[in-house]
Image 1 (cartoon, one colour):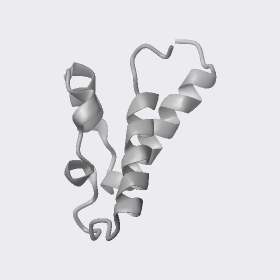
Image 2 (cartoon, one colour):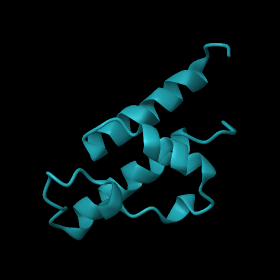
Image 3 (cartoon, helix red, strand yellow):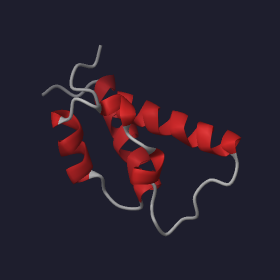
Image 4 (cartoon, helix red, strand yellow):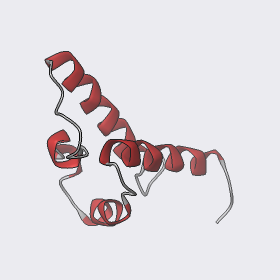
Length: 79
């Protein structure tokens, strides 16, 4: 457990998910590591329900890209 730049990348992923979800994504992260279907997580299933859904396709695509980036930061294998 050495502290490296990889810790910052993981923290970025956690923080990004926390912003999207509106709460700490602890259980989501645990389920993500055991799930085989990581690439098919829907933004609507993760987005904080207190927020309105994206109103345009461009905004939806941008938020979807952010979600995919955050999930990529949480990979067990950092390579």
